[in-house]
Length: 130
Image (cartoon, rainbow, N blue to C red; front, side, top):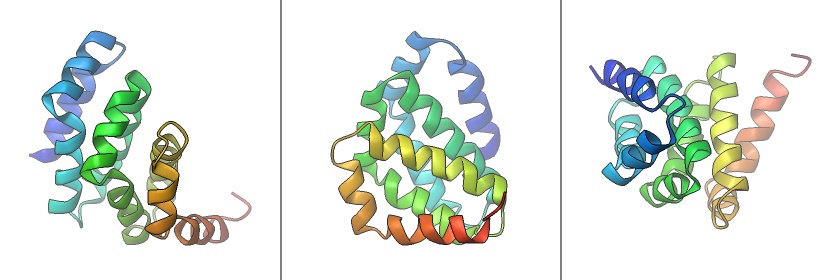
């Protein structure tokens, strides 16, 4: 299953910069974004995908650029919209979005153009006080 594969990739890259680089070069960010699109209704997959995107970007900013080109900003915003009632998933998506927009020059513009401001404010309002 896709969630099993994302878990395996997380284990293989955990605290290992070389494996993180290898995963990025092999297309991990692109595959994660494609899985998010293909399995648009799977909360578990989206949670693991957001976490894996975080790890990939923190491990190597070039992975963030790869993800950005594959549509990671739009996929993460889609997660925020699709699973608005899942607070933990919102948190994972927000961290992934933050990394995509703060570490990659064009990420902020992509997020603004894709409705990132509105999605973030909606999440903040929904979970105000938490």
